[in-house]
Length: 247
Image (tube, rainbow, N blue to C red; front, side):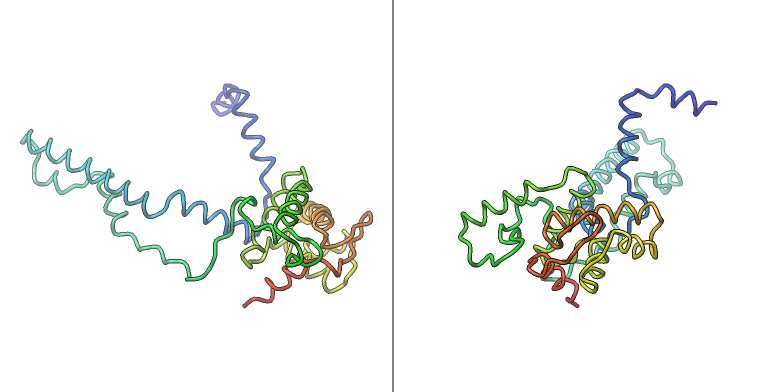
């Protein structure tokens, strides 16, 4: 009863925000590339520097408390040995195991496509045959094709960001591409069947629809209704093959 009252009293804007988050949540995702990007964001937000600052703040606060206790003179030795929760947190943070450094030479996946070299947006042909003006114009044209559906747009961004540093894109893209590369022609039913081995029916179907759209937009394949035919001239397809082949 109390829970129902709390929900009813929530502002409409808060409820809408929660519903929007739930709508965007894609349960069952095993997207390694997206998880790597999320980890990098978390590292930047709660990195060692910030953690050190928090420890310093806690230590400063403890020093002040000790000074107050000394002035009052009413604190027993036993009480002084019982560190408050904040002291324990500071000690734990200070003694935590240092985060292992990333392997040298491993580039980070760009978070903004604006920072990705225009050469990576050439979908067919040779980037080396184009001058910078042509490359920039082509990048703008490709960027203009970003699908409006949020999940497909995220895969679009992940695709170019990951490939620009030689990494594999999302697991869904890689799995569907391997199937397409092997068979040359596949249907949405083929993709769903491939995904159903690892994901729920709903996830498999939604991901298949996103892949059908994405592969056509970036010219990995030519789409005709529910069929994809591999584009043998696709630069993106070759980049994915190279990323998959890397040890």
